[in-house]
Image (cartoon, rainbow, N blue to C red; front, side):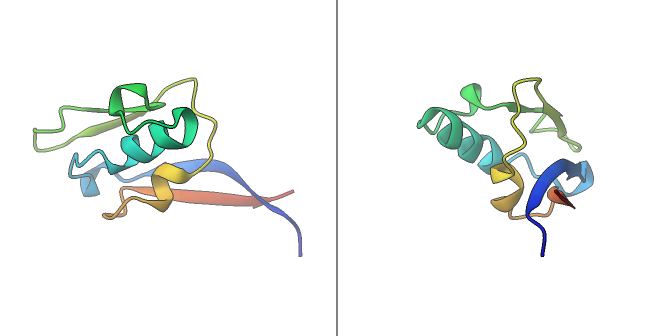
Length: 81
């Protein structure tokens, strides 16, 4: 079996609730602080009917955001090396 690597993260914005769990885990994984403003993704209009998920150029595609998304708004797309 080949080693798996994350090649992309699928976004299903219609499932996003704006809870920021993804941003909390991203900031903790990368900066050892639970601070959504330090995350490599942003949730815009999180109190609206349709939050928008935006990944910044600093995203390392580690997949922590998708692994901890409780609502299926983010999913890991894997590929083999």
